[in-house]
Length: 295
Image (cartoon, rainbow, N blue to C red):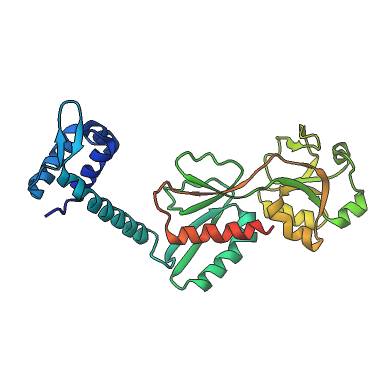
């Protein structure tokens, strides 16, 4: 009975690669293993399936007749494995998502609530932190990052374009005046939550990058805290556009010096390096991508 999947896969790869040694390299096994699997398959089939000479390899008539059945069976098996790995049709199980605090609070908290209402068998756990998590050690299914990720082993899915922009409350600008040039910011209070010793690298109207060292009297290690100061009229903040778009639309914040912005800092979702995405992961990525596309 032809029921050994390793033997069938090996037979398929031998004919696809054109030689036993090439099939061995493709499968990541030794040449002796490939020879043994083919011999075992032929013995159980009761027929020679491959003609082997020192110079070339070719299928026998019996091998040619068997190959389409093997291809179809392995293809159906792969599709079944993919369906099982993806949670069948409806997402289910626990989905663990890591994201920066501000982004997660604004975009992922409402999205997670909507998804569990839609899918009764899905649970979502959000880990909102501004540090970079270890996806493997912390069992993270999706990690959202702003800017180019450094994770070499993860698969990147770009969710949206994004840049950091300068914003301030209209009341603050009415009181202190609206800057008309980057140099005017020297006369303003700036707010920051990143490294206070680093300059703000900004791209101007001619696409030239300029390092500007802001004068900051208020700093915090929380983007939400700095956003609250900005809304309260305490100064000018450099923040991801996706984090302040609702404040801009509502008039709580005003875009300052719109010709100046950070270099591109796209939003990516990282997923572990697996061949098939689970349905719960794919659904989450599709929904958040569609959500961000409207901003």
